[in-house]
Length: 326
Image 1 (cartoon, rainbow, N blue to C red):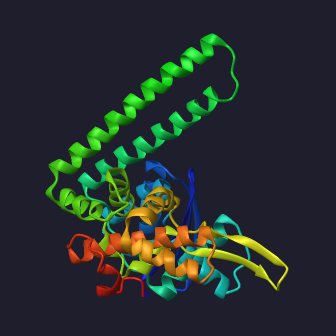
Image 2 (cartoon, rainbow, N blue to C red):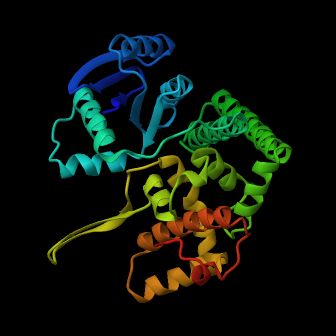
Image 3 (cartoon, one colour):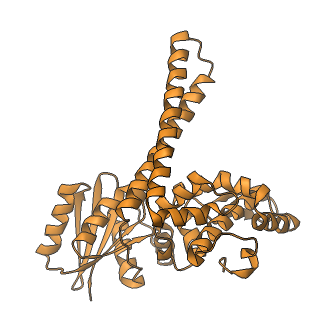
């Protein structure tokens, strides 16, 4: 049996479980370069050879160790947390500690043999850094605008807030111009970006965010798999005839993708014929507004997968010509 390495990643630490020769070995390390080097030495000391390492897709906290192990020629899988959660539920996994999570991840890797991961290209990493910086600046701008509307009376504070709003708008514009420049300089990014923006509802920033956060769309076997990665599945709460809660988006999966698709879905409901047709059918079936918005977000992601898979720009026949939603 190949050695299995399950890693539960947090901001500061790595909880690692090594499955080797029917042994289960646990170690906690810091989530930094020193910790990564100690993990490498630990693998060597246990004579594990090439390991199949598995960790959850938790954003930037796990990227460093994933790339470190990949560069050492180990096999690496970065898995949607929802898959591991469902696997744990099927095994009646109840303990919730970092060590228990690492054990579950290692068992999942051993039993399920998830697909292998590879890091983003340098140009994609650059794009992702710019997109995330733009998002950070927009969040700061929203905070400052909220403060301006909070009832603050001090003239100096109001003036300073206004100055910072102007500054942040300028930095956002600069970041977006840089994003355009990076895309224009890369034939690969430019082609993908043009395909994505051919979809009504998906503009410059949404297309850039999808490319930055998804990376290699071809790494997903199907559009539903990509939608599950984003956590775009509705959660219903019903009990008998008396208890009912509004449908909401599942919080499993990549929140960055869900956030970037919400406003485009609202636009697409007015301008995208495929999304409009979907909404009309759902309204006739008495679906609630949020269910329709979630479905529109999911359909947009399916269409994004479709145009990149076929290398053909959007047309309204996608709804019948291709079955990306099955």
